[in-house]
Length: 365
Ligand code: SF4
Image (cartoon, rainbow, N blue to C red; front, side, top):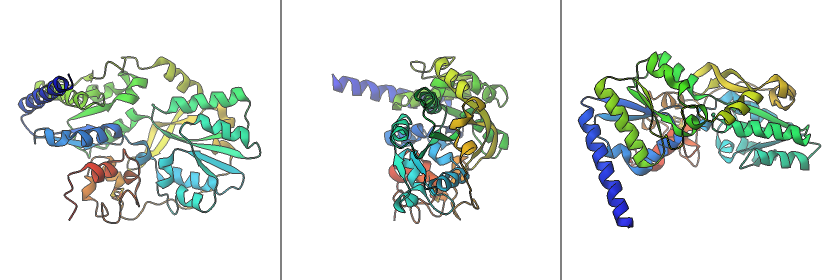
């Protein structure tokens, strides 16, 4: 039975690759926007499987990677207050800020606690009424609803010492900024399945309508990704530009109205700073006026000194698909996952980390 299934998968993959080869007759560049796709593509060997005329680029889809230094510097500044407990996902500890990192601050004695869900922050706040608990809210439309639910739970619990430092970001405005900048040549997009499960298809329509590019929402299994590339190949071959949904078993046309409702209840759209893309209008989520008492920036004193990037780190160009990680002189020499110099080497979903872990090893002596 297991043999039959793997034979079926092998034959289906072979069919899709042969069709992609037939349909795409010249060089094309397809951007996978989501960090989970980047890792899935590397792990399953899809890059090696695809015909040579198809090049896959990684885009700005890893939330830790696109979080700009000014946010990290604000979080580090918060951690300097004696009465503050920072709660955060573990990846954030290793991201270098301008002159320090949260990991270094923790080693110096700052109270920084790793959580696996923002809701754990409420337990910490309840157990430490004399402290201010600040949750570092990083992520796209996928994780923002959970942070919003945590704010509502804090209100329900009557907690007055819980705050959110929001760096939540929205994917479609970043794609618009990427296309408007005009410096990356891309012939189609593999769109993120998880984000799309929340926002649906409509927010991506400008890609087809204004830029005449095809885009396909894709799942995360190897055959999902190959099928999505095949769907892009069909569009490219016929000159179409449509937003299609390969991941329809999860992503509905209208997305998840309940998740979107909670986003609208707690946040307002705001300009946000993206690593590599700069400030993008309407691309961030800030706590709205109704829930202002939970907004760390509005309620705590956050003094940031000078913000700067690590000299020589080229994360910005990696995130825009302008260069490959191995084109950065620091890649796999000074910058490795154990000692990352830039955010793209930190998270498992970071482009540089994925290349280092699963790449073809051509940088290795
Ligand atoms: Fe930045 Fe390191 Fe990637 Fe170079 S290899 S772009 S320094 S994260």
